[in-house]
Length: 448
Image (cartoon, rainbow, N blue to C red; front, side, top):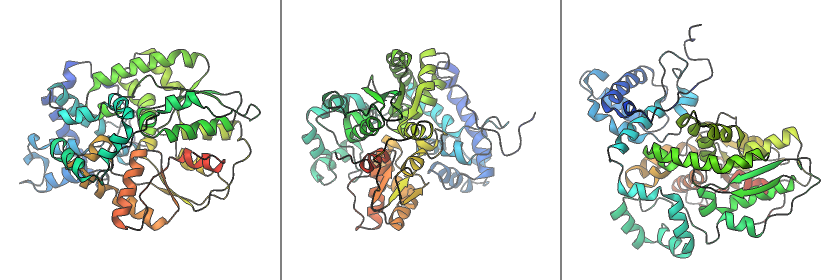
């Protein structure tokens, strides 16, 4: 049967052919960019997503003919650079994704361009150093007070130097570091498990992720507490980073190496009956979807993808299949919940909202707009103002919602949105945007 116009079938994705030399052929990439951009130009449904699409449409509209035939492929790079790989065009807007015959996958085409640039040695030194999250975390955790002093936006001396030397915007919030990692904290004082809870037959491994391990152990501790309340036998493991920072830069060989290593390390844990629970949506997306597309013939990667759940997805699964333990109380003040792009891209539904609705009498408002942060790119001087602009609609909704709590499954998005909201109204407190699992833990009586 021929595909229906508008691609009403479920979207599918092709394996990423990064191991073939043809994948990196820039002439072929530019030919495909021209084909895709021409279709986008005739559609324009994505005009209000990331900055790639306004840049594309302005480039065409300002050209001699007002069509793509008078645009040079040499001018495509800013469009590629503006893509944050959020996947929202592919998941929510584009009517021409596979299996439609037009076969558009805009984010993965941008990824291919970046991979070709990376292979050609065009990835900048600074961004390569910023994205070495495990190395940076191990070093910074040993000198956490000094590292946090140096990266604070109020430190004009050091942030000025970082701007001049590294191109990092002086006002971009950077993640804090902790002297005690989540892995270390989990071994030292795990919460007491309730063996009589309805989900006491479950076993889970919390995949710590580089961000939770080094930058926000509180997310992991809250997840441990919630699962212990519900009887789940848990352990914490962290073989290494998922590679999302390297994916953003097109270093696909490095991402594949990380995938092989983590999947191999996790294999025996899966065989023991554990669900692998990822604590941030970007990492869950990598394990579930991006790794199998990079390594479609790797059995360990496929096994890990099938066994992985996002933390919010896992808690909702417990609630629906087993029932929750008693003791969940109300949370005063209301919650403005940002629906993170990489949570949406997992195609699992609004699981954070479903989870927070388990709280009795919860006052919840869901915000379905991109934060604009874009991972490592969002802190760079060339991109920060655009990140603020893209996040402004969500920031306005946070301000209008006027809730006590602003939450996001993506910690970077949450902190960025507080910056956006504060820029719109200085009375908005810009201290912390908790992960939804932290709010659920608080409703169960958890205090950090």
